[in-house]
Length: 466
RNA sequence: GGCGCGGUAGCCAAGUGGUAAGGCAAAGGUCUGCAAAACCUUUAUUCGUCGGUUCGAUCCCGACCCGCGCCUCCA
Image (cartoon, rainbow, N blue to C red; front, side, top):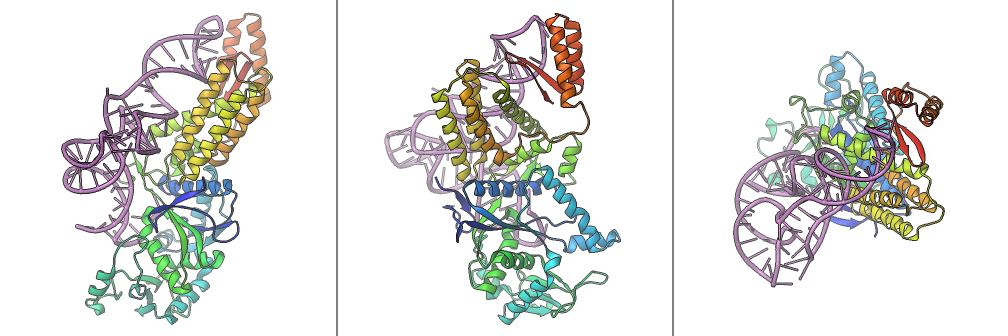
């Protein structure tokens, strides 16, 4: 069946195809680079990565833009405190973010768009909104006037009409005319960095950057806009208000939102001591691919309970898959082809694809993989697996890994070379043959200490790194 | 209070109007010189509670209880 997504805008699952030709124009909200990203952030970014891969698996090409928010209140505050320029400060965390993404095997979008490189375009957009009477200014800042956008609330499914009509009390007492109006251009406080512009000195509000960069690179109507659920309101709602006021066209056809991540059943927070950055977890010895697997294994629309136990389970599950792959590659099977098993492989592959096409049901897709692994292992044990079945099995694992990307172990520094390991194994085999089990066991233990696990199988000795 | 998501085995977590996927853990087994590793088997009469609709509900409807998110910055 065709690819389907749950669209927050319609609150329904809809069949997805790009609006024009074969290229998906997609915008996803990226990081605010004021600190290291945490695993909650990466839950969403992992979802976006899976989304990219599934779109491509459906034959679509991608034009995907992700913003880097490199100017905002927290960044300014931290940069000032660190006695660094905005650029110096954000460079550190932008690079850290990209390193973390690489560790998690997240693809780079076609374009990363830093907000600070698009200030003139934002100013122009705000001026254009002003010309359309969607803005007003107070005390040097410019605001978007929500009352000029009647469908405000359509994404978050909130009805603000009552508030807007009734809330205009004591306008003079507040900077904003209405509590829900939001800043497009903020006047700088003392010592804050700013840009000179036709709107006066200042810096852009958070929402305008996404609208401007999305439209600049992807056009007036996107195919997909994605982010975390917490962005639905007000961020994405505001993006819609701005963008549609600018263009008069729907801003995005599909809105996809990843649910929240919790840690050990609780909200992740620094005060609870359950706040993890990717780097924290890697430093504790957890493999990035285990983290990726855990984040990917729970369908994106379900809240994910991230636990250290879950992380161990993920590592072991990956282990099982790698073992299966190793077995396909190194076991000696009888010649021929088992047609029934070949059909079983094709069926698993279809089930896998179909699950992902169903709004990225990764849990179900994984079930298809593991069921196949069990059946294939059983066939091997029963001697029913044939040499001719291995390529299809490996191809299926290839399909799996083109999406999940966990089978290749992350590089670890040091240790024995492959050739060195092979030499020791040969030595041990010779010792075993001579029934010198003392020596053979010593070699085995020595390898084990180096993190090399040996397996004595019918097809000979097999080894892998722990 | 409004909007949204969810409560399925020890843990993580699919799913369907016709009787519960998968992973981890646990138990048993196969293999082995012994191990290790690997593999296999078993493991929810039951899906938050109470009603209703139905021949039949975990899945539909209603009420209630509990958890989470958004409503101010937040993935």
